[in-house]
Image (cartoon, rainbow, N blue to C red; front, side, top):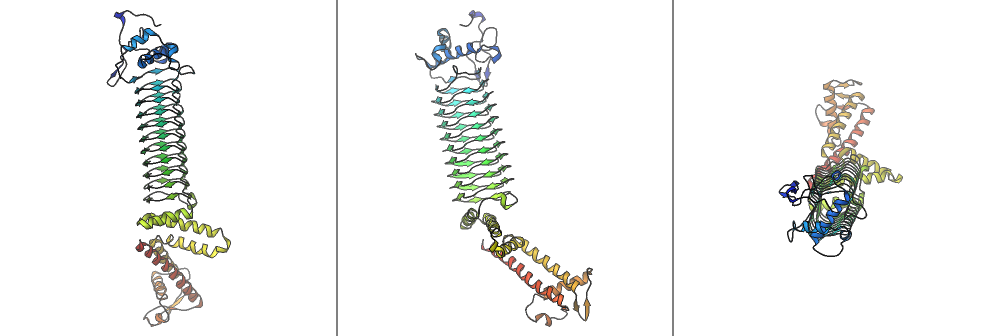
Length: 490
């Protein structure tokens, strides 16, 4: 029993948060009640005795509820009953909880509408298998040693807005019947949402995950909002199911991001997302639009056997620098390319056509009998980026003409009765004459001989260079025309 205090000495608890004022009396010489005193200002056994009595007053029922019945003080029950309005929510607003133990915890508790806003748990908070029959508010709560909500059931909305978890946050197998709000929450320990079910919107907007974030096999039946979330360690969404829009726009993945076997039924938005570590979308299924516009993939990216059934957008995305870092496969790249061409998405079709060709080139390189195909694919890549860059093909053509012009100066040619032969040095006028020779050399048959003032080949070496020039120039010209054709076809 608490020490008796005369009515003249009783004063209300000074705790307030926003518009909410604590309705209980201060404890002894303190200015706060037993629930709002700091941990070092109260005895744990006294706190649990008061809490059990408060819970009994809330329940308005006889019999034991787990450990509550053993701790009840009838005098305290009557005192707390006078402060409770019928049908009022269960207020634990700003309560400071000492460390829970095997005898004092909320495992398996059945809560009505519950408000833990601004509460603090000095030890690990145990809510495993608890049932929240109405809305539950844990906004601004501080869990100094983590919290366990494994298997908990939230029938209505659950707000963990800007909650801080200093230790692990365990929501494995938890079920959220209405909106789950984790916006702005900080997870300093591992965040475990394995097999969790979100039947309405799941908000993790601007959430911070310092340790691992595990959503393996989680089910999101409403919108999943991870916009501008920061995931500093591994993020595991293996086999997660997103029935509605999955929005990761602006999210930052500093560790590995694993979405293998994930299913996106409506759409996936990774607009401006940043992947510093490996991004794994192997065998993922995209039934709706997949938007990777402006995304940054700074490490390895895997899309092996991924299934895209709607639009894929990589507009202005920064893909890994080498094709081996883009761990797709030729079949997946082809399927995305065909899908993009079918719907007229020219930019995406071009990106994945180049990826498809790059994997084909690598396949030819590993097959000894396909060395000729490999050389042709390598030439195709270097001269026009697989027909996707008319500018590169035109630049290659111009460089080839200039190089062959210089070779004509070195090997020598005749112009109006004068032999032009400058060895390694050439004047601008000689180079201009040699360039004219290179252009005339492309004309068919004996036509060059009928052009007045045309330079004339003068030696076997020059003629050899001329034959090589014709072959190379027409190949590069073909590459340029193919690239132009690909552009116009789209």
